[in-house]
Image 1 (cartoon, helix red, strand yellow):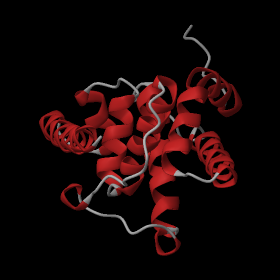
Image 2: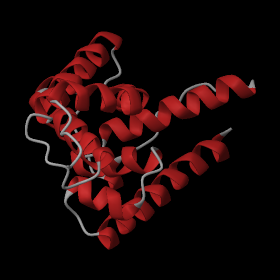
Image 3: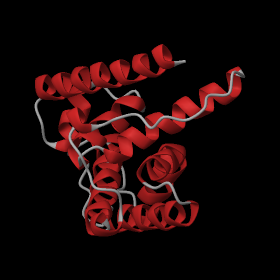
Amino acid sequence: MGARRLTQDELYARAAAEFGAALGRLARAYERDADRQRDLLQDIHFALWRSFETYEGRSSMRTWVYRVAHNTATSISIRRKSERVQLVSLEDIELPTASIDREREFDERQGMERLLGLIQRLRPLDRQVMLLYLEDIDARAIGEIVGLSAVNVATKIHRVKKVLAHLFQERVGDE
């Protein structure tokens, strides 16, 4: 006799326990405002719970969770596009200039804020790829989540990293 199929609530509870922290980071990467982060996270959790009604286990739970979460965040982001900063291509991104505090902790926090600011301005697909990459997901799995080949994902990651490194190098040279 086969193992019993988990219920929608059980699948959701397992996913929320295992991936809850990553979903929180995803919401923070998509939204700067704390209230919008909470709203987005709630929308992601609701979409995830609803999605388990049709989950058949054809992909890993991790792939399923990230696919639902990123699709939800991207859909909401596109709907809010008119009220947000205009999304731009990688070539058009410029790092904001600001006075830099010399303390290491502040530098790290500011660097992360700048990185998230740059990522928030990326087009939805590039944003998804980078956020998944930063969650230490490999190119093949990212491709399954976003619907691209692993080669295309690796190319996007390489390109974004190169642009980000260049922008951060410019900042260091300006100090």
